[in-house]
Image (cartoon, rainbow, N blue to C red; front, side, top):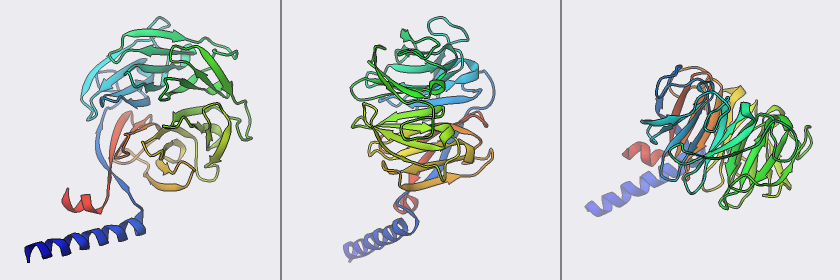
Length: 314
């Protein structure tokens, strides 16, 4: 009798969960935690412009106006930081997006110095490349960086309105894009991400859209012109679901890899779960957790995906 009751209860819960998924979407995200405020102390921020997770769960934050990188646990406990304002190795001028490769090395778009810097997991300088200009390997305010499974490095070269691709040590491979509104053109691309098969997704910020390309820059698809407003950060999970920091709308949007909307959550303000100018975003491989860096509130927020089963048995 006990087994029969448990079976009936489980069937009922699964049925309700199925109804919930079909009626309200397969997932929703709830606020879990936040840390940071305006300042220069450990764990404080002045425009957190990039967030990136390592395979070991460390979260790196590009603290733009403090000209440094901060490292935290996945739960927001401060670990360390490095960097100061300047042009030397390991110094920064308005650092933007960042990425972590499989070996744990950290790449930083050193925006104001028009270069990319590469570090070890604990901030030891490894190499740098780039200078101000529009020739191959040069940059004009590079805004973000992404790394594929082969170690190739992709850079959103914002004011050159193009994407550049490099080896893991900075050797130029190729570039694509020019200023404009046509497919494959850009207007200040701010964010970039690469999926497991090497497809490249670009937040074409001033054109209010996302563009998707092959690893060699061949255009595939675009979306968002009718519902995005200054999309900045972009991230992918292990199933190639696309997460966008829709900064001008103060919200987060989640799409399939072909641009079909899945979920959004928003609310302008400074309360938990609300946003002011969300510029940076990072999803975990499973998509269960999403981290958002807000320029307007100078903080990181962490969200967790939940379904009805978790609501009932959390």
